[in-house]
Image (cartoon, rainbow over all chains, first blue to last red; front, side, top):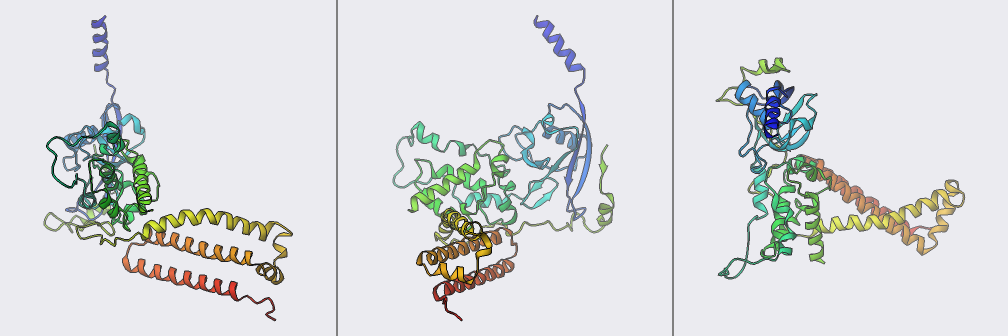
Length: 252
Length: 157
């Protein structure tokens, strides 16, 4: 029985599942031209593979000058967020069969940040907004001799926003951020939310004050682009609304 | 295997840029840096946001009621004339209705346009002058309307 299954598997492995896919990549190289251009690559690839595998294939076999970021390649490090078929996704979590390989697959850098080369953007403004909300535990008084205890319910309160991997898919899908980089953006607000609603943290009021300013949560237009874009399934817009509610209930 | 989709543009500019002389990158408008934004520490945006929600609810009643009375009930739009307006403004109730509607609608609209300007104007000078134009128009309309409601004289002729 088992050998039969194995034989079948082997036979399947030999018959190729590969299909022809066109990757239409937005190329920009400041050392060659000041204009970005589309370049088509044709690949033979298994549709169950990911877009990142296709990009690897291009970089390793076809054109070594293709530049993109990736580290873990398994959806944890958050370095390969890009605009695939017009939607912000992680290349390492997007299967080719899920994005209609019959048509050319367009791959662009994420919007609203300076493109440095091909798919690599300058993330500095994004991380500056992240730093500005003080994403670290702040407490008063002496350090406890044991760990800081927290009930399961208190932990559950901000569980959703702990999942953020800072890939910038949400912030670079936000139309307000596209036009005004001074807006904190969804990712910074999500990471502020993670500490504002942490029962162990004592600087929630300070963070709320920062997000209450003119470039804070009140610029959110609730277009839900961020929630759609998040590869971790964080309810980003809901988190922003919770910060708004906290501001209103604590001010009145 | 690979095919250039737009070859002419690339070939033209090949001679212009190289490793020592790279092309300028396109910076996003109003990029965040260490020094921005300056903190104002006021609740203005909070009040603005709240005002939009609350005035919106009140305006639904006021504006729909206004449209119903003016355009549908009792002969519709053909009944409106100097005498009709004079008759309505003889009552303090309708004076108050129109005054509240004027103020809420103007401030609601002005605040909405202010956020639109904030969202869409890229350069600081454009932003500033658009807002100045908006504020001037708002103050002018509100003051003029208020003046008319309070000083309206039915025996003007």
